Length: 315
Image (tube, rainbow, N blue to C red; front, side):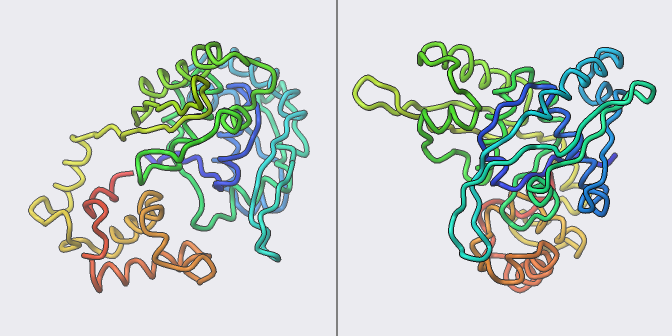
């Protein structure tokens, strides 16, 4: 069964916006559909999300899912986001605002929602280079808080190091789309942060804790530390299927297809993207990156020692 991957440019991951759980789920399903139909989405075509698909993915009744999707149409049409991205011509960081969709509606007889992503969104979900974040849809299926979904995305960018940079309280509130809600820190922690962390720990592939930063007695920001939950049975099966007797820090016994899978692993990309210049062909094109990394792995696998090579096969 193919994994359903939600893939976003890091500019979109770090954007500031507020969407309900259902609105975010529609975006997830539309991104998956867009990635599968790249030609269609680049042409600005309609993407169709069926209630049956939504119900199956998020384990809800079909009728209930369609009614929720219909209610989300209005919100998504009005919703926008703010993001920062390096301008390709000047090399300077630009700050932008965009809407999520150019058009959105529903068809009762088909039980579906149709949408067209806004032009700014399309390159942030289809034309990706090295700076992107990818995770399986199933990781956010159990999250019932809109803030838990957003916090998971913000944290998972740092998968390779296991902790985020310090993030100020103001910036975190902006990224979670909070304007006037939960202004008191007690309410913010109880209704937003602690609830989100609890859901992430229960339903996703990571366990999270946070450290508070203070100026005197005033909380000014947070650092999030997390660990990926190990699926020992799965890792054992992968290793045994390839060659359980091989050293986990060598590529002995791995073929080119397996090396390519390792090179494409988002964690591998995050661990080793400093090996190439962002302006080089390997830093601009994922296929060139894969070829280059396979070559380097064959020439000297010992330069890739941040974690056992075979761990990158499991994602």
